Image (cartoon, rainbow, N blue to C red):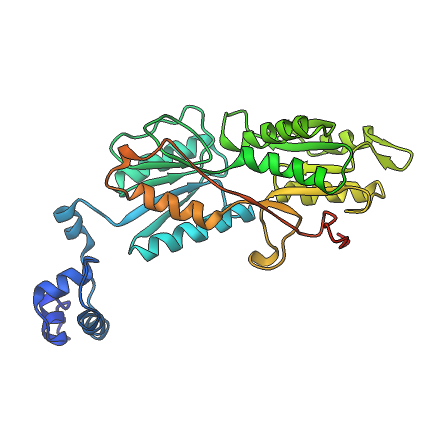
Length: 337
């Protein structure tokens, strides 16, 4: 009968590494220790196959070193990029991410929050759409793009400033008339301010404009009808379009092509988000770029803050415009899309 070997203990690791037991404890608990000692402990752990009992740590410290991220999906390139940067920001702090996909299902949002409570996560970062969502008081909670209350920090890009920047850029690039197209939630959230910023800057600069907004669930064909209704004698009534997201901008460009309209020669298009092809290559459209890495870093820093009550209710991060081939640049450079 084969003899069952006992699992290596922390004391075994200490003997193998030639260090004190307390040094091993500090390493496995993510506490500061000299680089040489950490390297020796890590090597011993690897050699012996030591597995740390995290449940014991939870009982001693009341922390699990996990943070839940609740997000619609990773099919949307912007969400995928956000997930990547949140995970990297957590890893840098020796935390793990509990990733929860809601697929815009409001009941799943509430279900995931209950699961996060049961798993005793150290915080929740959430991008949600449930108007009746109840935020737990006993878990640090940070939202992205949606204001709940002064006690729940919200991290967002400067959506109002981004909308205004898009309008000013279209005016600066010679547009005589513009339109804003978007799909939006009925909730009051930060992305809704993109329209407000656009309208404000159009009025300020004297740029004639129209707004076409669909609610979530309405067919995209409504945008096609809108564009067709404003198409006369081979020309569109607008020579500039600001679109609520880059993904929607790409689809609108396809609609313009059906009308034999060229981008950017006939119509200049600016999106919002900063989505790049294959994740890190060229931009899909000229766009207002959200600082995704900074948003993720701020969310993680905030949710792990020991003084969450002192954090502002809205943390607004700056955006910038970047050329992506669907606008005419000042130097006359034109790329076909």
